[in-house]
Amino acid sequence: MSEHERGFGSDNHAGVLPEVLDAIAAANHGHAHSYGDDDWTRRVEALFQREFGDEARAFIVFNGTGANVVALRAMLEPWEGVVCAASAHLNVDEGGAPERMGGIKLLTVPTPDGKLTPELVSTRLVRFGDEHAVQAKVVSVTQTTELGTVYSPAELTALADLCDQHGLLLHVDGSRLTNAAAALGCSLREAATGADAISFGGTKAGLIFGEAIVLLRPRPVAGALYLRKQSMQLHSKMRFAAAQFEALLEGERWRAAAGNANAMAQRLADGVRDAVTLTQAVEANVVFAVLPREAITELQREWFFYTWDERTGEVRWMCAWDTTPEDVDAFAAAVREVVASHVRS
Image 1: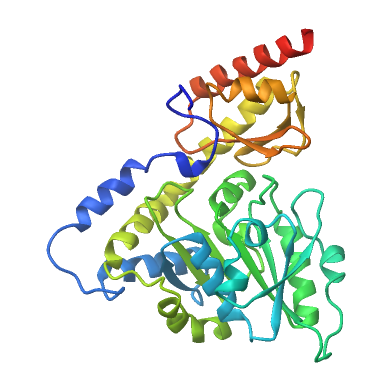
Image 2: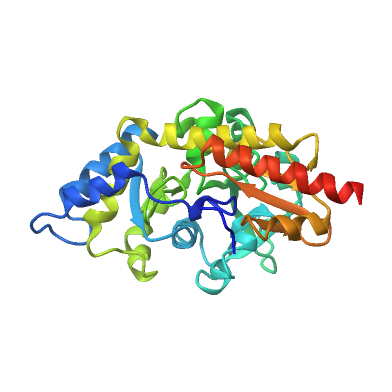
């Protein structure tokens, strides 16, 4: 077990933004109608429209798996499938929920950096009209990706254009959309350019719980109201989930939180790049590096982080909204010292 209060395992390990806790406490007075028929939810729906446009419809859910499954079910007919990166959370870390709970066929594509391109997606755009084949209907991208890389608005536009050419829909799995927007210095909408549906992350951004599905086309909206309930994602005391999003979105509070996480990852990369091999560009709040296996074992006695690939010795170091320069500098010093000792030996 780590000896340090804050490790580099996940932004899910971080605490809750103080303003979010204050918002929950402020909402805890008197009675309010349930299941989203309350003033907090209505204000948050208006905030999402301010961020993503007047056509946006937001549906608050419990977690990211639920957000992805409900959003994709709303976008698909039973015979249709989703093109995604092989490394996508949707494919690797949802416990088979899209397949088991949604009946969704995932059409995966290997990528070197976690990002889809029109050329990569096109390899799965085949056999249209063939009754023996699942029909590609949705392209799902993760922003930021599981490898910490960030799609530019231009890259998303190219994918959206491809979708338009083939009558497809674009889904953005935005569990770390705030990190992408902070890294790009743009709005949330620009960080999800061209999206028809967005799974908007709240937990990794500093909430206790809660994600939101943001739908920008009529077809998904029509079914989402019913699919959210059917998928066990409709919260009865919705005001407490909505109050969190209100605190996060008001005044772009998310930007400072995500910006700090990103800055700390860059600081960490700068602090260790002469001692380890970085395997991905550091564009958001995560660093990937390769270390000697013995060094990994020694570091993990005091610091918590995940080994990403046990075969190669690749590790993942994740920074959060509450990571401090002191945390980073202490960890970077430990990495340099441990790696150096194993190189000498």
